Image (cartoon, helix red, strand yellow):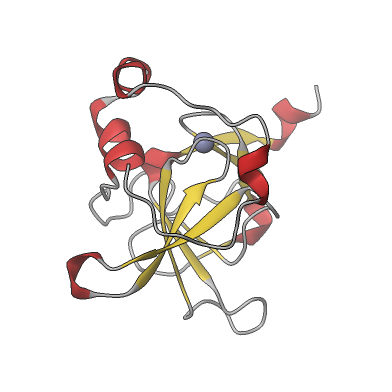
Length: 148
Ligand SMILES: [Zn+2]
């Protein structure tokens, strides 16, 4: 996989999940594989987790790492689930120059799965960031199940 050099290497030293493309293909649905491993994008809309506001955490579909909390989620009306922050250290940032734009791609620090992009037009009251994430990259775990 082609990688843009960044200074974020902290998460790389941990037990990182590495699987072959064939293994990922077996584990994920075709759409999840397309988004997470091929840097694809879910079509915009109000399905998936876009308008989902229950209390809990959002995990990486591929490796189950916790990435976002429901407290960071906000209504962005952009057609994708949006968060104003990620759980610290769970997400890595890479420069994405595809499609003639310069954007900041967000990837799971644990398995390198593609999550989406982060933009600077989030809520000014909090971080000012909008983590625009694909539903296919996320797995919601309700709060109740976590405190079993
Ligand atoms: Zn992951």
